[in-house]
Each structure stands twice: as structure tokens, then as C-alpha cells.
Length: 198
Image (cartoon, helix red, strand yellow):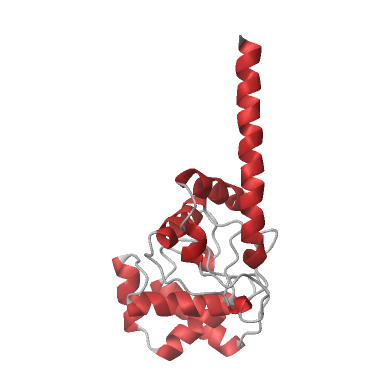
């Protein structure tokens, strides 16, 4: 009886792993095979906290986040669909599989062109307004507020703009701080988050 139970559990885990592989392959088109995107407006998702990835998928499925298409769709490098369309058919279990898979991978920061003086100004802004939730200069993988440092610059710009405009929900304190910053300060933050981690 015990052998049968172990066999059933083993088959179930194999089926889950196979389903997870299929799901990951569909994500890899835009987010890269290891969750590291080569497009500036698509985030790196490897190594992000599991809850951050899961919440993003749930938000996209529920249209609680802007449903823009990646720039890669323009030249046919990725599907001409947005994240809401991709998340709509996913079950809760499939979202959880994806969140677990990508959160278990190491975070790999993007390498971007950035302005050193803007990044220095952005560092000061981060320390003043953002460090409490996004510790370690926005690079702590233990923060449930997500990793910002090393993310793709256009993705960061889009996210900050979405929060400021109210198109994306967030913590009240963060929204208040972002709305108080001017465009140059937001740009400085984007350059800081795109700068190399020391």
C-alpha cells in the first residue's frame, strides 16, 4: 500500500514538473530561458520573491495592472500579446508553479547604459524615500517589495509612471512619495536602479 502511495505521489510530482516546464517555455519567449530578459521594457523575474511573482500574475489576470505589450512584439521577436492575455487562462496552481520556479532561480542584474550623475542623485532619493521597503539599495531578495536594482531601465520607468498615474496599485506611502517627485527625480531613480550593484 505504501509503495502504491509513493508511486501516485511520484507520478503527481512528475506531471507537475512537466506542466511547469511547458509554462516556463511560454514565459521564456519574453523573459528569457532563465528569467533574465534581453528587452529593456520586460522585467527580469528570476530570483524575485515568490509572492511578488505570484501577485503580479494574479494582478495581470484580473487586469489590476497595465496590460502593455512588450516592445519585442513590434519586430516579431515575441508574441503580439500582452501580459493580461497571457495570464488570463492560467489557473491559481499554474501561477504558483511559475512563481516558485522563478523565485528559486538566482537574480541576474541587467547591464544597461546609465548616467552616473543621475544614478548618484537617484541613490540619494532612494535612501530618503525607498530604502525602508526596498533595502540594500533596492537589491535585497528577501524584501517582499521586490528587487529594483539591476532591473531593466524602461521597465522601471514604466512601473514608476504607472504608480504615479494611478494605473498600478501600490502601498499608500510609496504612492505618496512617487507623486511628490518630479520627472527629473523619477528619471534619476531609473538610472540608479539600472546602475551596477556594488
